[in-house]
Length: 94
Image (cartoon, rainbow, N blue to C red; front, side):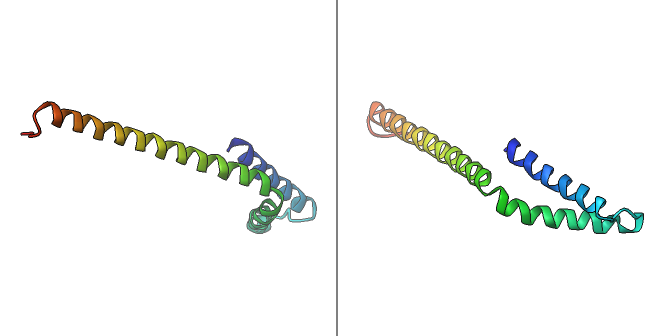
C-alpha cells in the first residue's frame, strides 16, 4: 500500500512542478494549478499504476479470504464444543 501511495504522490507532485514550469505561477492561478495537478494525476495513475493497483487489490482479497477462513474455523470449533457440552450433560442443557 505504501508503494502505491508514494507513486501516486510522486505523479501528483511531478505534474504540479510541470504545470508550474509551464506558467501557472501567479497566486491567482494556484487553484488551477492544484486542480489540474489532482485531476491529471488521477488520469495518469489510472493507466500507469495499473499493475501496482492490481497487486494491492489482490493482497486485500487474500487478507479478507484468510480472515473469513479463520472465522469459519473458529465457528466450527465453537459448534463442536457446544455439541460436546450437550453430549456430556446428557442431551439437555439448562
